[in-house]
Image (tube, rainbow, N blue to C red):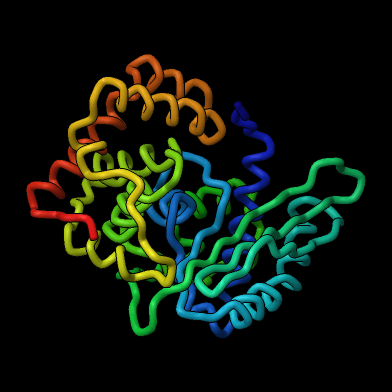
Amino acid sequence: MKSYRETYIRKAEIAQLILLHQLYLQKESRNLIFQGGTAIRWCYGGSRFSEDLDFVTSLDAAAIKSVVNGAIKGVAKLMIPHFGIGAVSVQEKSARVSALKCFVDFRPEGVREKISIKLEFEGLETDKKPDFQNHILSSMSAVAYLIAIGEFRVPRANTVIVAETPAEILSDKVRSLLERPYLKGRDFFDLWYLHTILKTEVSADNVKRKFSLYRANFTAKRGLDFYAKPSGKEKEIMREAIEQDLSRFLPPDVLSVHRARKYAAFLEAVSSVFADLQQKGMRLP
């Protein structure tokens, strides 16, 4: 089980912001909609580390690669004042009709460990988009703090970031919990944060739309009852998934508080959201 590494995480988060800044300077970037745990972290005040930059987009793979390649020159320049001289590389991990995944790596000279950020782009069906909001990078509270203490040193970081609304991200988390082959603790944490801390209500219409919004087909691996009315064994499966995954993304002292309570807050939030969907007449396709 991997552990939380604060020193690396602080570097990775600065690298994420540099990438976001440069990606959204590109001409076609308005067609990239930021989503997932890292969008929660930067746009909506999330408290957990998230290792990926996730986007949904109407662009095809060639156009996405053009945006990424256009950003890399600026990324390479901005990495130097933050991490010293080094080299930036892009490694494509997978490309299909519905999605593209790649890693942007920065390897500082004389340092063994590289800084690696995974980018994932999920394809949208034609003429379909989730609800989104525009955010000015330098005005986001967590970013403004890093600028104020001198850790994020990018002149005029007023790039406009296009991000899904909290309600849309919550619907994505519902879809993920239903269709992932295996459970990820981060999904429980993010759903809890959106629903309990941000007071985001789940929309049955949004969730239904998510089943056909993306080019990738939706196939349920679990039913609504798994979360709305879990058995003792199912709760234990969820607790184990949370324990295994979140140790990488939360500081040990924070994780220990949730562990002592057997992750009850996360399980209660998930149960509440899925029970609410059932009461609203939600049915899986």
